[in-house]
Amino acid sequence: MTIALHEFMARNREEILRLSTREMKASTPDWSDELAYGFDVLLDEIVRALRKESGFPSASPLPGNSDTARRLGSRRQAKGYEIAKIATDVGAISKSVGELGRRQGLSFSAAEYRVFNECIDTASASALDEFWNRAREQREHDDAARVGFVVHELRNSVSTALMSFAILRRGEVGISSKTGDVLDRALRRLGGLIDELLLAVQLQAGVKLDTRRLSLAALIGDVTDAAVVERGIRLETRVDEGVYAHGDESLLVSVFSNLVQNALKFTRDGGRVEVRGFVDDSSVVVEVEDECGGLPPGKQDELFAPFVRRAADRRGVGLGLAITRDAVKAHGGEVSVSNLPGKGCVFRVTLPASTTPAVT
Image (cartoon, rainbow, N blue to C red; front, side, top):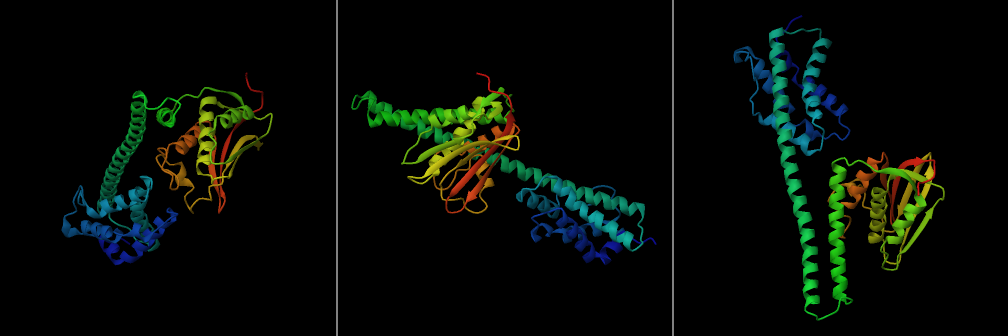
């Protein structure tokens, strides 16, 4: 039986919305009703475009700048969804109409169905345009904020170094004074910032790894020997002998140095940081356990985002853990963090193992 498509959609409006919502929910683990907002309006717009008195427009049956479709795209970008989510959600209307029509044994004219498909296409295009516009604006805002953040940190270190140098040059105190120590820390801070930024850029650009077989005990030993341990904290290591990893030495030193210094920075006064290294299921595993007091619920994944700094400590630009994640990923490994509520947390790095001794 053939029926006018616009009449069918108007008569079955609520059922089409129900089926569309069900379809969207099925592909959205963290569904919220906010994502369905506006689909009823979009459906009504399509029905109006299909009515014979509208003249069956041959192109752009929906307004090119449809606020309804644009809001759909904006909401999905704000929720952090992939752009493919838009096509899936808008396409849910088409899928629901087809399913309901088959269920009722109905068919629709080719002319109406062509316009219907144009409506879906126009709605998708409007939503996609808004998604990209919002994403670009967010990217530009984030990039500007990050550049400004890094420049602020660099300026602070340079200003500290210049003030310390001015005092030393006047001869008021010697180079071995507290002012000399301040200058030393400022210069080290500048060097560390530049190294972090350079490494972040290299990893982003897909730097080629200089890989070889490495002794895990020697690697961790070099890292812990160079670590700055203060406030009565104990730094302990427990690394199995005869364990070898396959990787880029400079990158892995940066990975483990970041994790150890991060643990030392947030561990309570007089606390303990333990570094463990062993083989687990043919993979090399390094764990760094601290006594930071534990992490707030749901914050584990945020720690690895660039320019995110942990807790109330505002030292650094927040690149250390992001670099760690990218460097480990470049080795084909994984990094994760486990919370120990009320005590601390454990960072775990898993890397490919090498079964032959390191090259010396």
